[in-house]
Image (cartoon, rainbow, N blue to C red; front, top):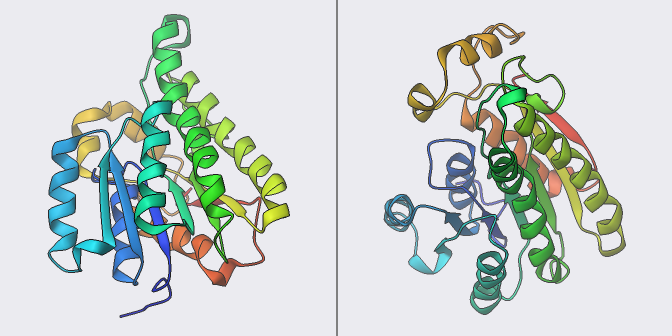
Length: 249
């Protein structure tokens, strides 16, 4: 087993779905990390916790059901992390939400919900994690943005595009401020990353529009994004900060 994260404490939010967060959590655990996994769904999270602890000691997995956009919940989450581990080395913000609606029909509630989950949640986690990251010898934050931040589809992702562009600005600002404490911050910018939940959740026209822009001629896979995230989280990228790396885009 590759053990490059054997002395690492890592958190991954939105980890219990079928997408990027779950792929990252499994990979980190498989390479030796102790991992905090969170999700808004207690049922999904319990299934993930049971899966993970079937192969590693339970003390290496901390699972907490949290609304990533709720300030009090996020604050409490990091108090639990402090009590359990005393530090945090890696924060992976993979949480996000897209609600497709034509721009004139995008109501404020939809806007606020998408911005809250896809941008504010990243801010809340990074802010609450900061004191713990300062205790780490090699702290790293990796935020998941989207190709929509640069070239949104022309049918209804105004809020999502704005949020994911905000994630890139947040990442650069965290890198600038984090340099004082050795905290690195980077982002990945995935294109269409396929998972089974998209079959039910995403309009086929939306999927086809994204597929038409894939230079490699295929959808990306969550594990392919996890490869890049683990690189950015690891000592292999120790001189990389403030960067946005496109994946399958």
